[in-house]
Length: 129
Image 1: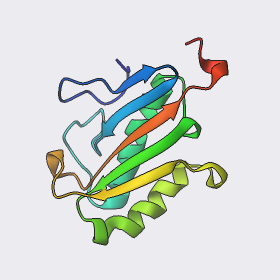
Image 2: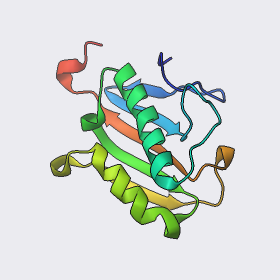
Image 3: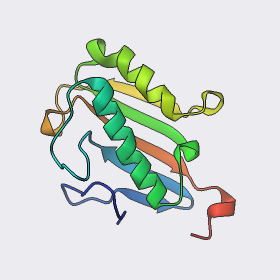
Image 4: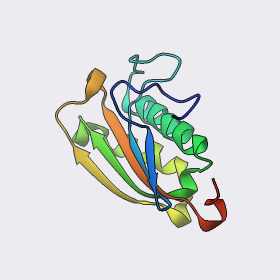
């Protein structure tokens, strides 16, 4: 269990690690302080999702530099894609952005506009965790 992070709302783990690969569950745009309460707009929701992902990664002793792949799910794809991209890209070094898939979906929990899950890798020098 990741301490200080968002509370799971269903029977799942925030992250599972196997042989140095970390699979981070999709995070929603609420905050640990206000579960189920979402900010307005895709930029604010993207920032909240990224903050939740950061909490999970930090709970594992990792950061965004360890992310290999991200999958983003947008309910208003055409309307939100450009603003989502502009916000999302600020969390990664331009020289080492992860692979990414962005998928348009019809519905997400809490009527969120976005959800993101990640795949990361623990470097060998951090593998003693």
